[in-house]
Length: 472
Image 1 (cartoon, rainbow, N blue to C red):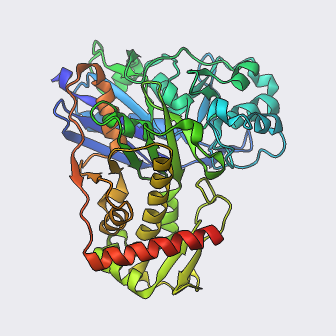
Image 2 (image 1 turned 90 degrees about the horizontal axis):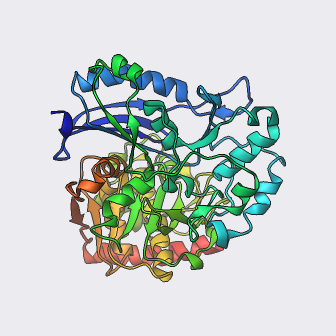
């Protein structure tokens, strides 16, 4: 029935998904596509693939829906992306945050990031501070500024594409952009001084409009169908949203391309921008102490071509017994060890990643990600975070990661989501039903603890890893 269905558009850095979900929270159908950026010949930067994504959505939606009419569409996307919207569409394509051709043109924006207490944004490489992208466009192409009606965060761009209605939303504005002042719940001084135009603020769960007639036709839906489009949400904040009401003191570890540790109970005044800690903004507007590293990328770098399913408890035990250890970092972006080059040790001696047997590389990768995750959880705990720790996303499926982090967290309660649907998409679905208070809550399982001998080995490893990481 029309009122029972929600269509979620979930755009991550690596993949995009369409998921049709019924009123009970069950997935009825889904489609997935690789999400790729490409160089822009006209502008010289690497651009997000909005055109191919739009084509994929138009092609995939009819087969996914099969004539079924969703009552709502909820959008969630990765952060660090803004779209320059003109009267009829994009004035220029959005910049991929991994492009790094800014040079000295954004020095004034860089200087604004010194006021961390105001905007809660650390100074990040490439375009991870989305304000740098906007500043660059304003300075590089001043002739285009008059054509830009407003700057839309990436989730709200897709909400506009679906509905024709432009809006802004706080979780998207507040994810390490330099554009928002979390404690004051307003645009940052720098954003106001630069005269950046934003669309009106709406809440993530608010209906902003209905699906455009052209898309109704393209998707094979009745011309009189009223499919409500909500404002949209930043992806890790979608994951956090599912716990804000039922478990407000929980620390959530959202894993994917990025591992994001969010602790609503921690004091944002005690965050350390030098360690890539920041004040995120939850969907309800509260500032959320956050720490992170590029876990999915680092896992892939360590894993190589080996099957991630090899990260078993037995492989973890062998990695610890043989003295393998990975020290940060294996990605260029973000994290407390940003700028360092990763190394692999065996029994304390550097050996190189190629020395690790392929069968052990996934377990070593899982152990490394657990090392960093536990470190960040501990950092936020020292800043006042309490309550249980909840693991979301792909790492929640890894036996080696689960055993390792459970041992590293000691007596602190730790759970994993057993939901077959990833936390970002589930959170987006819950936001579409936010005011109904009828959404299915999290499906959690207490993390299993390792056998005493393995826990002892984990404690010894953790002490050695933290000492070596500090020295490295």
